[in-house]
Image 1 (tube, rainbow, N blue to C red):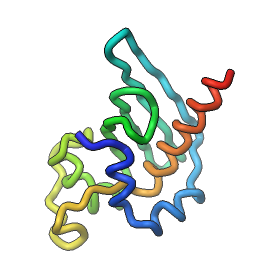
Image 2: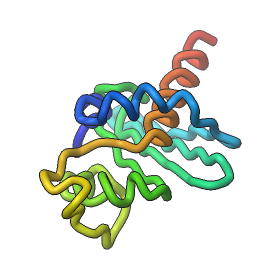
Image 3: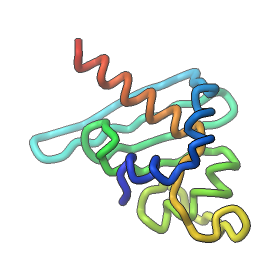
Image 4: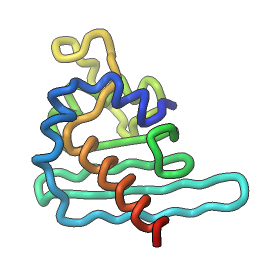
Length: 128
């Protein structure tokens, strides 16, 4: 499983820069934790696409993450590559022969926006 930072480092800079144009109608962050394990699940959607991220530890860039998005960019570029590394919660993804033949991990703009929003919301909640 990859960390959020490992995935972001491979995500094209144009995708990251344009992720600010996305929005979410609903952002929910829920988490369960005990002394040894923490899991936060973030779900967001803009009415057209649904994206989710499951942090296996504190909501932070250094935490292992499993993601999914219903958009074509994610399906055609990253779903298979991330599934092969245990970082996508999708099954039956097709090998991206044209779009990503080297299986470079990455995220669509929806997931970049969602994970950024989750980190910001978590930081604000910690400040109290």
